[in-house]
Length: 169
Image (cartoon, rainbow, N blue to C red):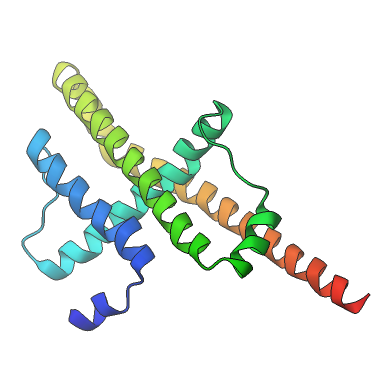
């Protein structure tokens, strides 16, 4: 277990594992749902996955929402890539930035889960669809996450090709 945890980057710990653990603790505290695991191995994997889902919701839903309302502004991606090569601190700042976004997502999900819990007590028939809705929701979330990640990769490759083309000239 120690070897496994040693292989996780600080990004994975602060953006996936930590939010997953905190969310699970808060869910147990504020709702009737139970996410905490007695088995540490199962717990680490479950908390990591929960944190990954929370992070993806932050990336796919929270970030675009905040951008569209002009609450946050982003630099152009090629400018970020160029600046990152010259300023090592930008990677750390970006990691912290993503962690804050993930925690915004965590608290929003906690509120939504509490609202769902209240609604489901009034309308217990909606509980029959929990598994199906969860799987479909996760599929959609990860499809959009895949597309976003693919777009970042494509932008980086294009930026690299452009900078390599500048060297050839």
